[in-house]
Image (cartoon, rainbow, N blue to C red):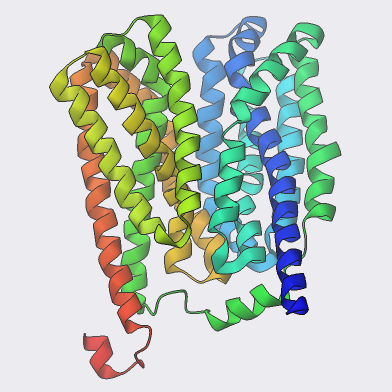
Amino acid sequence: MDFAVALADRGRIQRIQIIAVLAITQLIGWGTASDMLGVLGRVIAKDLKFANEIAFLGAGLALIVSALMGPLVGKWLKRFGAVPVLAAGSISLAAGLALVGSANGAKTYLLAWSVMGIGAALGLSAAAYTAIVEREGGGSKQVIGSLMILTGLSSAIFWPIVSEFNDILGWRLTCFMMAALHVVICLPLHLLALPGRTERVARAQAAVDRGPLNLFPAQRRSAFILIALTTTLFSFMGLGVSATFLALLHQAGTTPGLALQLGSLRGILAISARLVDMLLGKRSTPVTTAIAACGLMIMSTVVLLTLGGSVAAIIVFVVLNGFGAGIASLARVLLPLSFFAVSDYGRQASRLSLPQNLANAGAPAIFTALLDHGSVNIVLMVIILLATMALASAVSLARIERRGTTQLGQPLTISTLSG
């Protein structure tokens, strides 16, 4: 009994250590990558004498590079593990930020963001979640959920910090300072502070090398396609709505001040939704989370579309959409863990990042065009269409999951293959 208690205590300490290390490095990663443009984008554009659009095009270019790197990063994660990939990400992000700080025109600026895209592929999201899965195995949901709650605060933490340093040092030295954070803090934490992979998880991986479900090859292929479709739609809707949220609320009938307050509330609700889903534990699976996210997004949009721009309808839309977006982002990360082996998580998650990041790159421009050249109602109908497609895909995943669970106890015979 004492031995079991000691093992449980050791497991809790390891989880706290994993969350602490990755929360620090991911907060720095997101805060100094995409988030910093919210403060420095226009400042850089003015100083380098190019259009604001060019400044923000850098982030889109980084997403495309990161997307194209995804499959290769997946192979590296499977072959070498998360730690060397995360370390390479720290070095690449540092180099990219140093290049941004050294830029003397649009070409060198965009080149710098290409390097940032490589760093993002190596050092953000997929590699961090793979590090958790390598150490926690199939029971990674709560650790990943905790990390996502903390990293969701990156802009709230880094916007004032970056703004303050820009006022004191200027944007170039601020970029060099952010680059130093990756070398001085993130790199040592990745290499030295992450706990090693435990024997318990290694044995568990060997035991479930086929994956948590007894899926046949055709079912695995179908599951991957459906996961890719569901998560890409979540990415496209999430970033597209976020990029146009304030303008959408304003055109729906709110004042600019109320739109800003409700926009801030949406971010808080998204984090709260992840916490609620995490607290549900095993009562909520990634598939049911995905279905619930689709339902919330559809309901929120139908309310605003049918009840018009009343304040009550707008508040209901913000609350339901915020919760839906929060758990959709959690489902996007966890769905591969429900269908594929722990040892294959990094490869599959990185493969999925290709369509997700390509969707992210185009979503803000597409949603902005729909809103500016169409109307609020057109945007809302597009959201309903996309969320309905995601719901159909998630329901199909639920059917595969149910069949895989039924097949778990069955030997691989001709009868089960034909069933």
